[in-house]
Length: 115
Image (cartoon, rainbow, N blue to C red; front, side, top):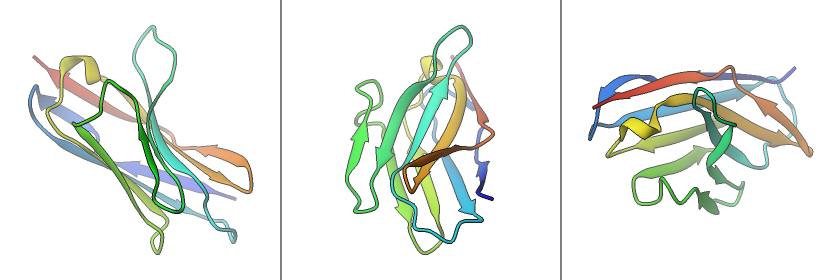
């Protein structure tokens, strides 16, 4: 049974930084894509950034140049470094991994950016 444990959310002032982590466990198969999504109140869940097993990254336009996604395959962990945070980045951030074409989601971690 695949489990995803997220950490690193919190409250930060605009312009500040946070680093999210998501550790996957419980699968004997390799993890394909890993990524971060977010959902603000009243909004649909949206893609923030993804990274393939080979290291190819993709970002939402709204976070390009401010957020960096990375992964440690030995630790089955994906990270999201968030710099120059804005109030509009406030949301619950969810980790997602794909294993053998099946997506798995984390429980979410709250990120709140105050102005």
